[in-house]
Image (tube, rainbow over all chains, first blue to last red; front, side):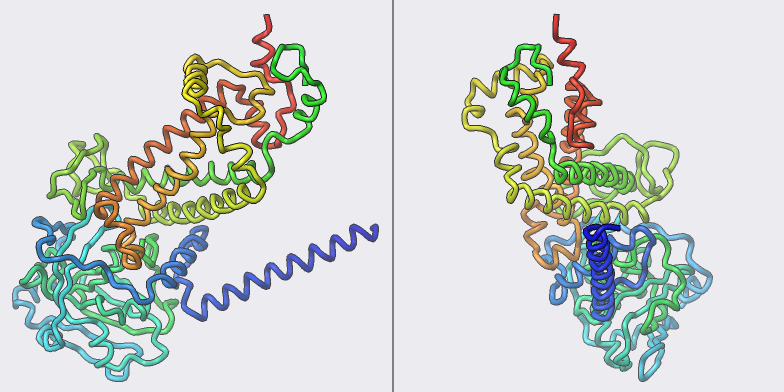
Amino acid sequence: MSQLSRRKLITSALGATAGVAGIAVTARLADRNGFTPPEWHGIYGPGDTMTYAAQKLLTRHTMAREFSRDRISKVPFANQISPPAEEFKRLQAGGFADWRLVIGGLVARPTSLSLADIRRYPLRSQITHLACEEGWSYVAEWIGAPLSHVLHAVGALPQAKYVVYHSIEKGWTDSIDMADALHPQTFLTYGMNGSELPVGFGGPLRMRVPRQLGYKSVKFINRLTVIDSIKALPPGGDYSWYAGI
Amino acid sequence: MASANAHHFPNEQYDAALAAAPRHTATVRVTHWIAALCFFALLVSGIEVLISHPRFYWGEDGNVLIKPLFTLPIPASRATVPTGYGYVLPDQNGWSRSLHFEAGWAVVLTGLFYVLAGLIGGHLRKNLVPAGADLSGGALAKSFADHLRLRRRSESEAASYNVLQRLAYLAVIFFLFPFTVWSGLAMSPAIVSVTPSVVTLLGGQQSARTIHFFCTILLVLFVLVHIGMVWLSGFGNRMRAMTTGHATEQPVATQEEQP
């Protein structure tokens, strides 16, 4: 082996090592600072991660667009849901008086709230756009309690990283990071356009995450779990976990 | 390169230099094929997402209860959309959306690299900005007429892009492609929370979606014409030039033109 090619080989090896180390350090830093999404969809991992990191960086202090009252859609639309579970029908027959939101996980004071309890939190409303990933959308007024107020009351622990929310409908579970969970426009929603939240739109209680697409705004919420790693969750299907775009 | 046929440059040294110099630089070739691959991925995944709601609107609102601007006469992948077809296509939005954004990242980064390298290396100035004389009405009309008659040019004439080609590439690189990205980003609730004007300037989220669709139509037209022109000017040779950098063999087209 000649001098030159050996030098070339060593330089290339050093370069490659530096490159790999650089990527590893960047990945570690990104992970530590919350710039990597909790799910990695194989070959789509790099794209999902870049989208999440870029949007996390850009949306730290941003608010979803709010509209004036006259911009509320005359005809909001909600995707039909499969026939509700027996448990839902029973609660609906009782006017949702027995609906409970069970809050647990990494919180100082695990609790269970009725709808009346949730209504005792300061009422907030927002007129925001709801866009479904399918392509349709509408503008509506959403009324509820900011999730941050509830998380504060139950004492979410410092190591909390995600809030998981479960629907009474089987298979509907999703989660958001603490930045979104504590965002002032993230609501536990019980009202819409000046009245009760209709069942078709997720009543009696719907998570509303207006800086993400509609599928993160899960209907019929009855359980919240605060966690520090999403690894324990069942896989979330083939839709991207982060839905800011 | 043979100078048997009478073209504009009888200087054999020039011809030799022309044959030796790569027709396309490595940067142009690599970015071209990455962009081509991304375009295909974006088109397929975009169509897949589109068929879940093949209706288009203007403004902020749009759903099946609202009268659409227009509807594509195709079946949908969601049962809630009235299409007149008796069946529903399978939902493939999960991977389609992920592929769309991953290819989007790849093509935007590739495009930025291409423009930056083109500015530094002079590719944009030398090969894309048309010469002043070529922009006169007469020159443009002549080039246009030549294209309409599908008149093929000799290899040395074709050593650089012609004026219509330059204008088309510039329009795609600096207008159509950025506008497609913009209208795409305008549909993102997170992006518009950063800068609402991204969407309000386009007239609303549904307007952005409709604009994104028309941008796609224009891009597809561009690609079809582009492939058509490549075909007319010698497919094998042009493909070789864009892959290896050299159009080494005498183009069949030029030989055929001899009596």
